[in-house]
Image (tube, rainbow, N blue to C red; front, side):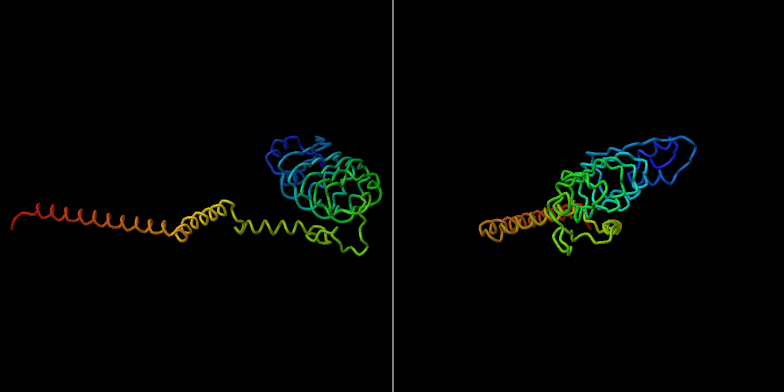
Amino acid sequence: MATEESINEKSYMEFLTIKESLSEYLSRRRGDGDQLEFKGIDLSSNYLTHDIPVEIEKLVELIFLNLSSNQLVGSIPSNIGEMENLEALDLSKNQLLCAIPTSMVNMLSLEILNLSYNTLSGKIPSGKQFETFWNDSYIGNPHLCGSPLTKACPEDGNSWFKDTHCSDIEGSIEHESDDNHEDKVLGMEINPFYISMAMGFSTGFWVFWGSLILIASWRHAYFRFLGNMNDKIYVTVVVALNKLRKKFHTQQPPM
């Protein structure tokens, strides 16, 4: 997708994640003359998660890219503008954060852009191809401002259009993702199973003991039941011991 590559790599690549496959593809270049042509990628309507890998910006020969209707998070790679041959880009219906990279202004071949229904924020880049896109490209991002939207960006920059979770330095989301990864490595991620187990134990504990505390008749019946069980166990043990003693004495030979 970025340069010449052996077709034999394809079967191996299918078993890797997006990030792993791109890294493997770009690192194992053979240049044996076999041209592998990938004009477009459509991975829409799947369950892809995590960030868009930054390696994707090296696929400079790509014509269209569709990653819509997934569960992608983080920010759009800052140097995505290096994909100058891209004509159609659809990242809609994900959970992408922060500003639209200004490098996208350099994508002069871009004719179709859909960034709708994310949580992007800040000012929409202006100039060149961005002058040709309409509101539909950005709908569903309440924190975006600037043309072609009717929401004007304030001059001081201090407004609700700016997402407080994003810093002015692009790449802050990657840092947060690294921190989350470290927490998982250190075992600090709480398994939902243990949360459910703790909630179930707490509920059952207080339903049982709370009923005994609040309802006197239940409390008396419960402790009377325990008393009766204690007496039965005591009598059973004593009778069994007496039987053993008698059996032991009868088996002893006379002196």
